[in-house]
Image (cartoon, rainbow, N blue to C red; front, side, top):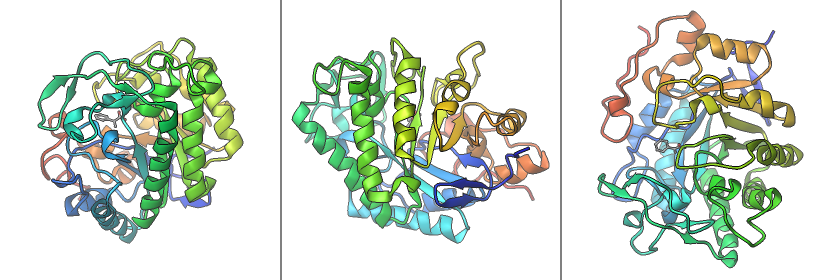
Length: 365
Ligand code: 8OZ
């Protein structure tokens, strides 16, 4: 029977275990410029015993930013900053992928005064409020719908970011297609009202994600590319009229492309960043969608030790991503292997701030 602690072949890499550090927004890059620095390098290196680290979501361009203090991968300074991170992780014998992110309508013009309004598939404003550049809350803006002729520019931004990720020394990249950001906004019909080749049918709504994946594979090769998805996710005001049909199509197309992995957030943990509870009685993505994808399937969403062991032993998932548990336990694989107690996490230090609640969680003595 396969164990969570067994190695895993992922593309042309071998992960030392099946515990993945989930991508975690922590809003601690250096200002001005959203530049990763020493503190971030220390944090990631502390967690290098993960089979694979997936970096926090990282904006590919100024319009891709949606929160203060999140890092970018569109300037030379940011590449140099990330190089410190990847060097530190590699010195600690870890592997790290960069998560490529464009938030679409979840952005705010305060992050990019020169570019103006956020862009999206359609001019559909999400409900609720957003944390803007000065760390206060403001209502969302109604985004500007991207013109069809602008879409190749967005794809080119992903490709350029993928090239910079290579320059920065990452081991691969994950395309963030989840949680109500730009690519998910195109996928789901609650946010995509387009009438061109990127809207309407499922094939059309999936087109941008697949073109971005193809562009990124063009830079990295298929064995170093993964995609994160969140079927049934409702975070960021998302909804779709037929998630099974939509994601069945997407998984088939990703499987045809032979990418290294798909990474899904279970609908029971749909509140991305917001909640601590696991909902019961909701669909199970690893059951529905894993059978449709030939590569490695990573599952995320409120797993505890027993749940993770069971999911891997049963084959429902090949690896499990942990978020909150990795925030509070830099040595999470060792603790789970020994069935040792876990440090509790402190939600008040998740987003922004300094070393407190970031690099000061203790490892086992
Ligand atoms: C929580 C807070 C801010 C951003 C995601 C990148 O949901 C995020 C995120 C989560 O994927």
